Image (cartoon, rainbow, N blue to C red):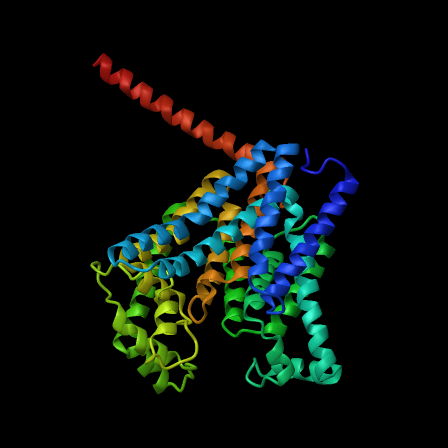
Length: 447
């Protein structure tokens, strides 16, 4: 059963979705008002609701609701904790509203991702890729027309050869921060996800690679590579106790990141960077300024979401024009405190993977681990926690992957068993364990 009853309706709907994606990602290219993409999010969600009432698919709707809850929980936690802080500090309504807006924007992002997967299923990723390509391609054409095609190509080659050390004016215009991290997700997805049509997969991979390198963020390059390698290692290794492995990874990663925050707080990080000649690009000033507002102790409860932005824009002594830390770990710790920060780390790196592995087998769990590695890598040097493309696309990719397993009896990858077979095997193990426990209980009764 499909959401769209007839093929013409399906084609028209796909075309309309592509147009909406073009507009959304053109906003992410800084060419249209920022708020337009959130309005489009709500439009797509309303469209999906209308289709549900006309032709309901209950199983898919429940599937999308599960993932919506799984992805939105950390943001809901941040907001509720922040509300408690704001109330205790008697903050003004405008202050509370500004802090709540980012959570609302992320809410609309997740509503959009869930709605798109509900309507288009496995076709969601390629349709979204077409819209992204149109938006980023139009920007590239505009820049090439302005700078000259020869200059554009020569600067692009120089950008690749020097690993973004020598960037001309045209390539600086192509450095679209929001988009490049989204292209990183697409690059990983088409590098690790086996499509039914290998030619389509190759074309999508090459398109993603082209626009990813045009935007070129240095931190994103090793992040993409490590994510893809991690996925393939996990697929070859097939660890027997995945939940234990993810728990250990989450605790070790959390400990390392916490130590990283301690280095920033103590000033050791800046000292080491200066000693090795690393250009922190004003992050030393940012870290020095914001280190006074938090303590690395369990008693530190945070200052509320968007504290950094509000304080930096209102404090006349703030030394820089940017109102961000360019470090998500520092930003979230400062704003939500010790306990919420640790819950966020463990939820993202362990609990969510457990849920995916339990319900949809280990392969999409490996993919989620790879995406987590990519996203957490970008958190080191940029403010990607609320960027539109990366946050929508990596969640959409995992949802599509799990939906593919949930709805198809025969999977693309012959190495993977159908979900029904896996569930049947697990149920047999539970039944066997139950029988053993009953036998043991009967034995004790007899004795």
